Amino acid sequence: MDFNATLIGEMISFAILIWFCVHFIWPHINKAIEERQIKIAEGLNAAERAHAELKSADVKVAAEIKVARQQASEIIDKAQQQANQIIDKARGEAITEINRLKASAQDDIASMAQRARDQLREQVGALAVQGASKIVQREVDASTHKALLDQLAAEI
Amino acid sequence: MASESGGLTEYIQHHLTHLRPQASPEGFWAVHIDSITVSLVLGVLFCLLFWLKARKATAGVPGKGQAFVELVLEFVDGQVKDVFHGDRRFLGPLALTVFVWVFLMNAMDLLPVDLLPWITQKFGVGHFRAVPTADINMTFAMSLTIFVLIIFYSFKAKGAGGYMHELFTAPFGAHPLLWIPNFLLNVVELLSKPVSLAMRLFGNMYAGELVFMLIAGLFSAGAGLAGWALYGAGIIGYTVWGLFHILIIGIQAFIFMVLTIVYISMAHDHH
Image (tube, rainbow over all chains, first blue to last red):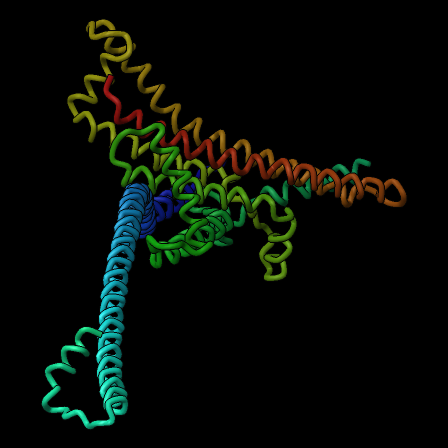
């Protein structure tokens, strides 16, 4: 056990080391650690918040999809109804058109038949007059007997 | 046989002699140059290593060096936090310095006992002890510095009056007849702190160094086949003791740090 001035020298150097550590080492590293702790805590918080937001967004999306699906089916229903209405209307219009065309065709037929009948009547009248004049060998004055011939034609 | 044992004794005595200035090899000013050199080199190494990392410390992703330094610091801070509930801005760095410095100085024991003396001998220096903590001056220097801090914080935490009151009235009571016994007990308790702190570390490291030397003595213990057998035993013994000593190095550094924390936090406590 030989104590000597080494003791004092080592005490001084120990004190200097402590001083150095207190001022230049500990505060810097401790600060970095504490800042990182805060950062990590913030990061974890943010992650948790994002997680919660995602969950609520999922719920919202599900609700919106449900609404959209409902709307889509409503639209489809309406479209089908409209299509049916259009078909019905088109059918009705077609039927009236057909009827109209049929009627006009019938009118045409009727008027043509009438005309043919009138022509036939006239021709028959003329033939009858020709025939009669040949029979009496005398020319019948068409103008004098016009009233008679018209009456005959009308009777035919 | 007698000459061999004499050789071993001489070998060990040679290794237990400190390097002293040639001008005054005796007396108070015979400083141990080896202890001072090694402890200062290691202290500067510690400061430099930690300071370089502290200077560039970022709160972002740390490098491996920074992570290591932070690991050590947080380990020490955790120990301080467990014992001391107050401002850790001084006690934390103090504990860190104690732990790392003592650890590094203890770790010098793991260098082969003959390595540093062999190197210094090349430069004409005959004696060189590599382990500063196996020098009682070193351990007492640390424990006395801590003792001063204990006194300082006792006064600071309790005030001069409060501390005096505690010295004379705790632990038995405030009766005037008990003042002297109280005071004597407190003085003994107070003085036992630096002594036990220094002697524990010194004893462990001195004994460890001595065992290394004894084992190293096996390397030159004999001639012929028996000598080679002892040489093998020396290698095995040195390895086993070295591995075991790694444990001692860490534990002693840890104990020194924890007791430092405990003593200084006790100085803050009111009785």
